[in-house]
Image (tube, rainbow, N blue to C red; front, side, top):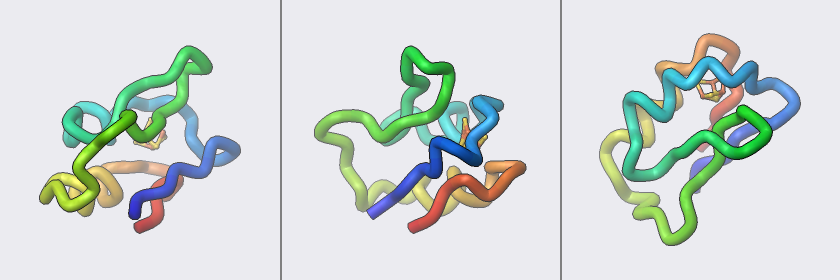
Length: 58
Ligand code: F3S
């Protein structure tokens, strides 16, 4: 399970660039988990590591 802290996210988009299968940018300019996304995708950990403000937890 991947979780994005909306308060912490600054909308840098790095996580979406790294893991577009699971993450997308929401209308609020912050990352969110895609509907029906495969949580087992290998890129989830990479997305977490890519975030400069540690907004992502697994
Ligand atoms: Fe936000 Fe971090 Fe992604 S700032 S857009 S969760 S890389």
